[in-house]
Image (cartoon, rainbow, N blue to C red; front, side, top):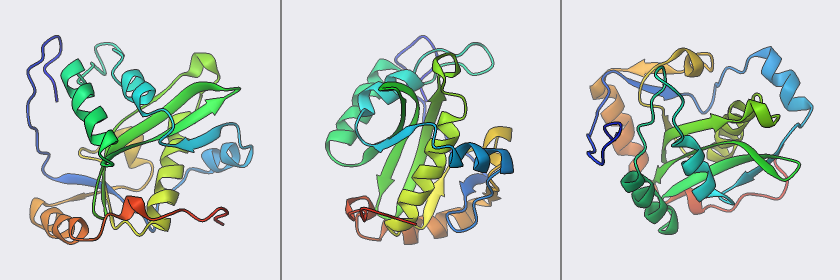
Length: 189
């Protein structure tokens, strides 16, 4: 994470580590209803640079910006090399929400998400998360890392893992072949 207002980057490791289940994600009933309305055009890796820049916008004291220009450049390089990915929500051709993260083997590390309610993007980041989980499951991922628990992510049934258990799961996941490169079927139930 970047120190706000500087290019100083700190390596932060959360313990316990918060992960989201790929096989038992809890989806609030209200979000299921929203998803059935298909309010957004969800896409994968079509606007990575716009997603990360939107995630990097300052959101005030309660959620300060931790993504510096230097970090953006690093993530964009990771994206070009096939390691960083985004899920985007468009409404009427306008980007209204999204998320991005890093993929290594069968592990995906969620980094940040955003939504633009003022542009009709309410729930867009949440629906991007559901799409991410779908994509990860289809591609055979085994770990979805969300770093630290927070109220927003806990609603999806995430769990905190002791460091030893997290490291054991991580070691197995990263040894898998590059799961992101697995092609998605045209139609997935």
